[in-house]
Image 1: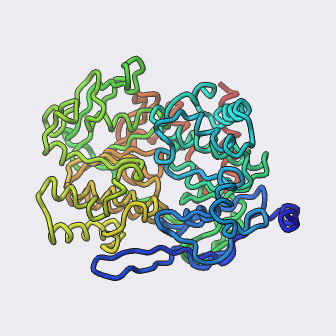
Image 2: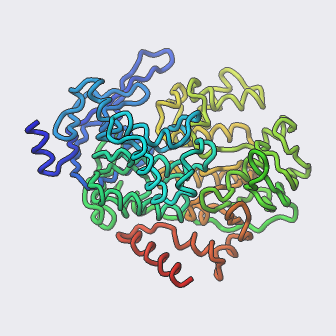
Image 3: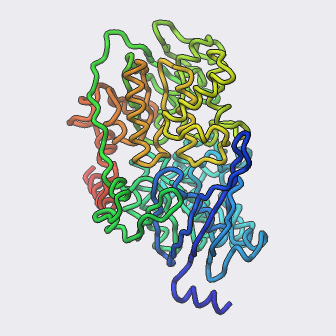
Length: 553
């Protein structure tokens, strides 16, 4: 107890010493092998401070974050070092001791909120669960706290959104609910694992500000895991750079951003946008959406309102807008997962059936989709080879050695390699899972790929590689893309035309050069001004500018 009090007095909350984390893989026709995921990493974190963990996908960021809770996912084992929280080594407390700290002393905000919520329970029940389980608050008090957090995080209808189920809110809204869930029990430490990945840039400002204000107001410490340096620069006091499970560089935020000492850190900081020359549209669009209106449930609330867009062969239409604007819903209507109430969709000169079940096998092959939430888009019981190989078998009848060869080629194209073929989704990082989903779509050799936030989980270096790959494939295969994203840097890199969506409708549409040129409508202007910049203090400037504009209106 004296040691605990001493640590609290000194302000040291988390002290990880010489951490080593391993996992066992089982290659075919070979004995099991042990691989090292985190190799001799140490860090300290004081109360009220934020340490950013950055690095490429698979660098060990999430693995280290989860270790602060004494947790190793998918067969991962903590095999060395000490994890000292509030003055005691949590690994010496056994399973019961670790269960007592989770949700009370340390909470976790997952990268994929859709996979982290129970679909059978209302949001409020899940947000207050930890507070009730650990006895830190009574039901009425916990719910009041939750509603305050909903309001602070900019969620719609904060007094009643807790009555909804996870599938009844957008991905970005669900991510904010998860942030409220972590803050509700007032822990000492929160592990934020890509908490703004699913958020549009306008919402991201509010959530980042809310996270930062909550940290300052409560004295809670945070590990902030991200691949977005511009974002972490707004909230972190210090930044740790990781690669292949090793510590590359650790320093103050300003030093890492402005004066990186290591070559790899400099590469992360200096990622440049891809130069993509805008292509002029052909006379006849390949996909044409005409006056589509759609809704969920009883049809009373329209989520798409008279939407019309075209996609031309070998070109990219980027669809941008805030969370809940209708971007992913448009994709669902095009793929037949949400039959439109009104309007039509033509593809390759033929009118598509509104329903997925009414479409031919060739329609299904030529129109593929890569989903936003890779965690819930793959069967966790299937190997990567099976997941990527399924389209090869289904559409082309390719099996056996030829299928394995093609799977290996696709894995090389997405910069993972054939060594991943026998792994399972639980053994991959978030970015690796997304790349597997891209490879699965490419396996069908489609004419149009709908990409729903496909680079949102990737670090800048890998994301640039994926975007370059997509552009190369577009040139080779004449494949078209419908690219749904909230990342305007990605839009500039890959788009030929842009549709800006707001509240279910298209508010600005045309060639990229036209849409990104002034004069802007108010919403497009807000989007462009909300793109994070790799500058210390940018968040404060953006909030101040937004308040001045609101006051002026």
